[in-house]
Length: 73
View 1 (cartoon, helix red, strand yellow):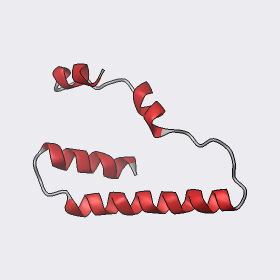
View 2 (tube, rainbow, N blue to C red; view 1 turned 180 degrees about the vertical axis):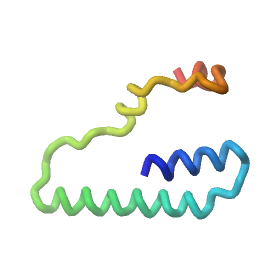
View 3 (cartoon, one colour; view 1 turned 30 degrees about the vertical axis):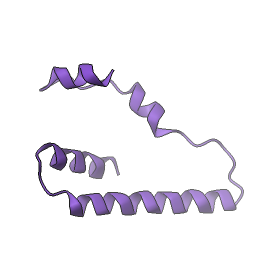
């Protein structure tokens, strides 16, 4: 899924049509939500990892455009 998200971001940054990739990304998210629902229905009660925390922990990429990395902080 991360590859699809990166592909969509790349297409958007290059001002290209990302409709097809974005639809794939939305379908993957829908599937994940269905799997989480099935897991919870089967008794899963653990706290699932939050992607926002993982994104905050990733170092900002400064190669190519250091001003974008500064703007993210």
